[in-house]
Length: 283
View 1 (spheres, rainbow, N blue to C red):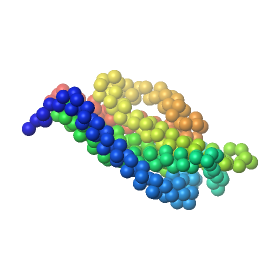
View 2: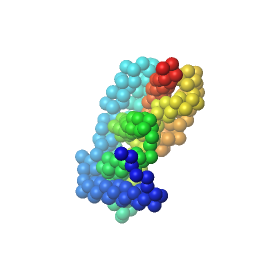
View 3: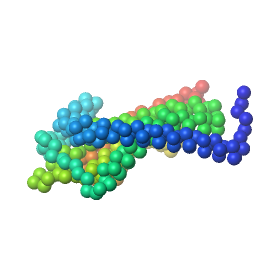
View 4: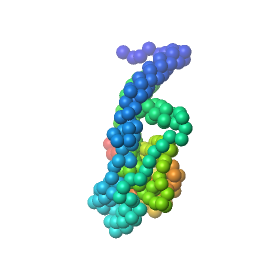
């Protein structure tokens, strides 16, 4: 049984209902986040303070070891590892402080809003999907769900990579400059740095999806991506410099290396799409 066609006003009314339900879900998520604010911001056990507590040296060694195992030139990577370790202090001297009466509240509110959206994301995604589902054709439904899941997966991988690897390595390296100057960072600046880096890496990790889409619409093929690999490396470093919030060489490098790996993965996506199209034409 087909869905009964709706008028424009009926679509608007349904959209309003979906938005209201999503906003209510976000409000519930924000309330939950406020209740758990100590678990988020406590220096000793708070989740958002975890990058300050992780050992940058251990993370860097594991990261470099992983890159070496997947075939990247180990000599260059080892040199960068020695450089990072020489700039990384054994102890973490960073101290956070609030410079305004409402700074703590505003930072907690912003964090609660972001975490609230994450908590409410299943409801938001469901409301969005139910609203657009009737407008999709059968073959479109076949591709939209896998594409959405893959896009979300790569974004989450980028966010997790930034939070557990990039930020814990970058913070002590950046604080190691001019060691005679004490590192007292505003809570607002620390939180903004963490969020911006996570968002930048989440967006940057969509590179294979973009390459696959470009190949699918016929702009570039897998062979074109292979021939333009050197140009792509230059563009990756430029994009990394733009996306990293402080434009420092450490987070830039930690973004550029995964992007080069993701570029190779994007070539594989383009090859798979080309093979599928060839099979469809031959079949």
